[in-house]
Amino acid sequence: MTMNFKNFSGDDIQKHLAADNVKIIDIRSADAYNGWLVNGENRPGHIKGAKSVPYKWFKYIDWIEIVRHKDIMPSHRIVIYGDDKLQIDKAARQFLSAGYSDVGVYYDFMQEWCANDAFPMQKLARFKHLVPAQWVQQLISGENPAHYNNNSFVVVHAHYRNRDAYLSGHIPGAIEMNTNSLESTETWNRRTPEELKKTLEAHGITADTTVVLYGKFMFPDNNDQYPGSAAGDIGAIRLALIMMYAGVSDVRVLNGGFQSWQDAGYRADYTDVKKAEVENFGKTIPANPQLFVDTPEAKQMLKSTSTELVCVRSRPEYTGEVSGYNYIKKKGHIPGAIFADCGSDAYHMENYRNLDHTVREFHETEEIWKKSGITPEKHLAFYCGTGWRGSEAWFNAWLMGWPNVSVYDGGWFEWSSDENNPYETGRPEHW
Image (tube, rainbow, N blue to C red; front, side, top):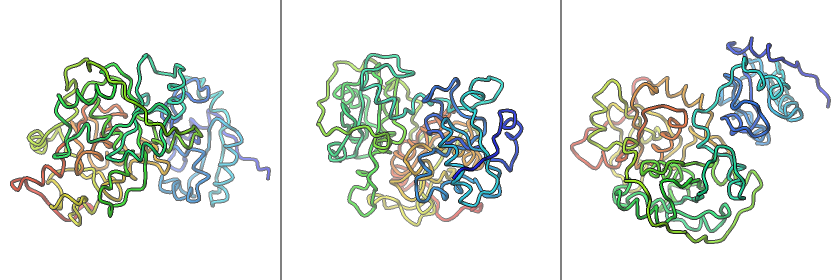
């Protein structure tokens, strides 16, 4: 079926940028939206204010629910752009079939908008540290991918006591790393500098090594003995934070984890890759101690107007309906902490992830946070139960370039273990 849509120009788009009733939609990949030049773009990023709805999402049965969750409603005028005219037309037709009556297209984003510095664009500040599957493929194939200036790299498949997650399929050449090797099984905090040094060296990682981390989402179930064993996607970001704390200067995370590797059509390997141990990490650990705060500093942050503790847990955990973990008894939250809803439970991060496990559009995360008083002007310390979800929220803020963000490593586990520490339950007044 042939259908002609209103074809917008760059000047037309400019006039609509500030209009509340217009939604400009970028159907390129989330990686292109963030800033990667994936198809010959002259400039990195996306049209200022555009929403990210990658073309592959239109193949999902519930794609329209995703769109509406992003506050793109039938009452809005829709303008779709990308890097492929056929895809733009198909996306436009799907919007029409879903009841969106005012749908336009912009075919000249690549030739016109990207080529003209007068047209405003935005990008994720530290997009280079959230890499596409294509970038990893180029790296392991011996090519020189964009924004890589090194001759030493290690690809790490993260898991929590679940080598089967690795052996059932991983990126070729990747080594496995158990999260227990970098965080203590007694406290769930980062391990001592001496332990971190020993582990990193045993995995072939120095301060100058480029480390690419990813995990595998395997549908965590709270009824399992170790639900975190199925949440390697979150564990990978936990390891990324600890490595940066130790002093690894170039840490990357694969956007979407192993799912993105599969979605891109790249082959999986099943070899148990041997680790190539190195003699010396090369820096005094921790090189970046400011990335973590412990309980004494967390208590001081609660007293200050320029700092915030940010609780990255589920609503039932925050209100005290559940503790969230089979090994934590006390229920509730730290008084004075700002709530930043993670999603359904301790092993999911739906509110920070897209359906394909890529990182959520950063404008949306920033908007939600700012409504709660979570702003880049403050020193923020994110926490959860034991550190994984807090680390992922921290990573979102760090990627956005927020200057003073940390993780309260002890989290609810450590705080609630001390009977002298106050706690609260119930719903806050603003809910």
